[in-house]
Length: 354
Image 1 (cartoon, rainbow, N blue to C red):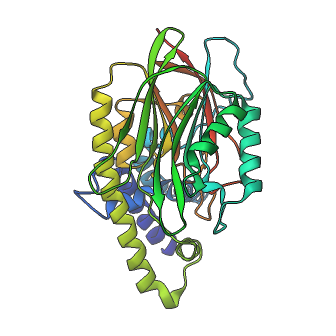
Image 2 (spheres, one colour):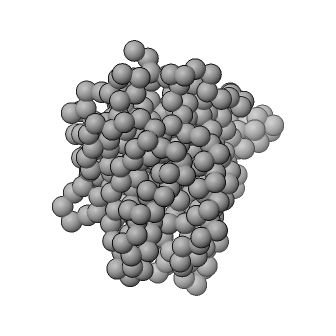
């Protein structure tokens, strides 16, 4: 009886997590939260299916039915095939790498030169043709100089960046695109009252013009103690902490919805093949992802394997970093398990289809 009640609650939770992809945050502010936990709820439901099959109960079919109703959502979060290691096999292949470098801090209050050196070494070794970094930072007004130094280290032919100033830490932190291809145009995505959340540059790649976006959608801004509470709830602080975290979540969901609308408009106005990289701060079960998926293909879905966790913090199974595209075929996808930031880098090898 207890197992049946618990499984029923989990089936309802699974159903709500499926609705998160179709219900905008402004329409139902609480439903998007369930999308964050889809992989966990999904795995627990699979465990219950095995349990009910073992005891030969018809109850197993309830979870199976809900899972099948959300089969596309399952495909966005889990990939079974293992593509193995792969390298560029054609001169027309484009290796793209995306990485939120967390201001080279990895949990420290100030940037760490050793972390910056390690990340730069990783980027040089990967020899990517396009590199999109989020939260690239420098103290004071030295960002421009550091970018030039980084570009030289990467042997990149061109770059484009947009920075914003944090007076609390005297930091310039921003979005950057490094490219070995020449740039012919650039722009940024911004809304009134908020920082620049995206940049783009038009590149000449093998005589074709390709628009490359680097996106950093609104963060939930959970502090270390918030993440600790989510991972290990404290009963004494349950009410106050839960309310504070809920408010942070809904505020971020609303802002990401508005940012996504701006991004969608820009995509509609773009008539070139597109590569879109970035930290969405949202999962494949989210409204944001489902809106972008209507226009772009996900390189992980095409060539990835497993669950592909990209958030390196205490909350498990969060894939919030992406390489999406249109006008390309994905040849290979990889997530790198190097912990120099609160994100893991991802890369894809793409081939133009025209």
